Image (cartoon, rainbow, N blue to C red; front, side, top):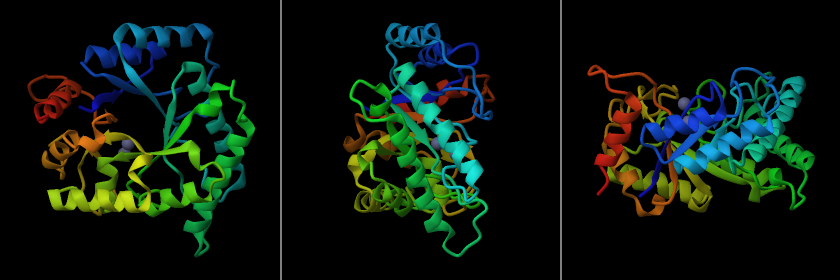
Length: 295
Ligand SMILES: [Zn+2]
Ligand SMILES: [Zn+2]
């Protein structure tokens, strides 16, 4: 059985996210390491990190995952934004190491400010080069926890000029990097649908994962974001829906949660917060929907 998790807010302290996930019945948690729409954050205190680790242990929450800030764009054609992004990403890695979180999921970026007809390839090259600069800065000493953090490239919906919506984009970044061992991949079910990879029938599902395996390799797959999609396959619009309430419906999730290849992987919900028409908490409703489909 996969480990079901959820994205939770760190407002009031990083440990609050762990308690919220546990209170809702989840086994793992995803957080932002800081306010996701600001560049600057106060440094993490040792006390904050200790409380976070204690909450994980007390509530038996495993596989904590950091989602990087939305401001970060390692693919930008604008030098200043790219430099600022690389510095912010290095800081995300340092924060992950301090919190004892082994993996960071991130959106690869987009070639903003690059209107050449090679913008896509240039963007992928800049992303790989930015990662290598960050890894170089962090260092590779064995005693340095930051050196062991795995970066999970997330499949994106391909909205606007965002890269990462083709499996080939992620494979290319890994191939271009001098540090391929530092990368894994996170599949977002809403995003790959929006990007045009169908999971609708068992045949589509098998075809999509065979393609992923051929282009990236299933051994790179380390996590899932489970979201239904408001918009249809190939729409390239990123809008998350509750499980079974979007264009995916239940069948793709039934196949996923019962797929023995993914039995040990964490699967995090990033569905909208709030309550349904019966005043039930959507996180609890979505978790029950997923668990009810387990065979
Ligand atoms: Zn996602
Ligand atoms: Zn999304």
